[in-house]
Image 1: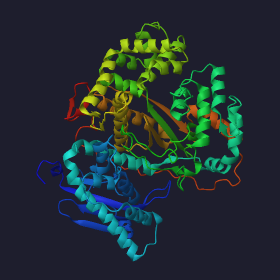
Image 2 (image 1 turned 90 degrees about the vertical axis):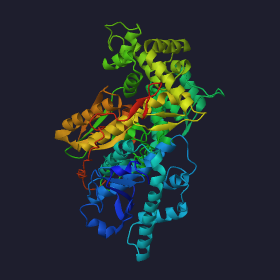
Image 3 (image 1 turned 90 degrees about the horizontal axis):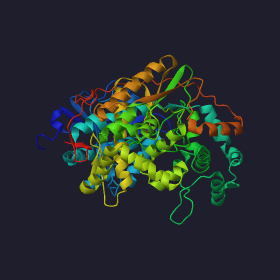
Length: 620
């Protein structure tokens, strides 16, 4: 391989793969490991018994060595299970293949098989691969033949990586691949290892009594609406309720009411009753309580599935992750005795990102005011300069709906439906937004033009969306805010993990942390500082605020959107026939810091960026 490919910065390059068992909700139990040094071909094969006796990995993990894996959070989770430190430098070829092919929908998927086939390399038959995975997941004891088969299978994946790496290298931005994306996989492994504390007694009661509760729950909620016939939601009755309530509802081209969840979600933002009905519909149709992945220690763990969304956001299973199902179910999050959790989310993150990246000074001033919705109304001349949320709350809500509608690409008709006004109101609000924030609109339109002309969009750290001719213009306009928000969250998680802060879950534009009740304020403050620093790095010095909600034992976390529904369910839930007898949860102590990358990203530097014609940073 010619010099200058990027690997020459490392003394050794190790390709590694673990086989492990991890029942739903449980931490991984490593079965075997195969690792191969890329240049020399030196190979290490270790079975379970040999792994348990080691205090350190059998390969170097310092900053002069590169650790290469496919979906590296799995391998790093095995490090944590064995009590090993995490490698300082990680290259995850899964994340890089996602980046290379994001938006292109490779025909064989984004797994290792799909990557190998995309680069014209031989791959193990998917059926055989699945059989070997099942053998590892089954758990021991294994026969001598099974042990050798698992080691051979593990080694075959490592050999595949050794062929895939040189094929992918010419397409990789290696410094960012390591400093941003590979580094984040260490934070992911740490959060997956920790898990979220769950009230297992109440969960047991829910699982036990859910079938009997549902019909009574329908009666309880539907008494306000009158739209159910038994357990069937009747569209014509819903239309009647909408008419009686004066709610303008989106319709399909056929003229029928749009009853998909996206529509319910959007309408619920401005109609609390709709939010209640949405919770009921989701709970009846999508809630799978048995699938919520809770381990024997009472903690929710599942794959966070980083980079799975086109924007690069995490996409964990909605049925397995506690933040996936209905918002009311988040009431199951409950810290153990003497413990507390802190939910930290950026304030108006997308508005702040748009203000900074577009260079719209009026929008930036509105964000800095602390209430961008009120500030928008004042800047537009529709709310007096002395107006407050208390004196002009109704006007503020209209401008808030407009700001959020613009972020979601709403037209005047959709915005008018959202605020329950004639279309002319929606058209006027959008006009005011365009006139108040012209730099933002030029930048937003520039993103769409840039994407359609060049066929791609980039975040500030090089996460790429490849764009086809049938791309949705609304999605293209929103991509820079969504994708750079994902970059911000990833970097914040990395910074927090570097500082040994006990973060336990990422949630879209928020972070959940946990710690002793007596020190949770300090943990929250340090995590907020990491979030502010991450925003400053992504936005070239523009710092975003964050809010914090602290819940101490014996209280439970509660999302305000699901509070009423939770109360209804609990009122109908019978006492458990057999109370949960599991021992109390012990706090996870596995906060192993990651070594910072000298690229300057952790310290606030922006490396190798150049501006594109519409102001969206692209890799140099």
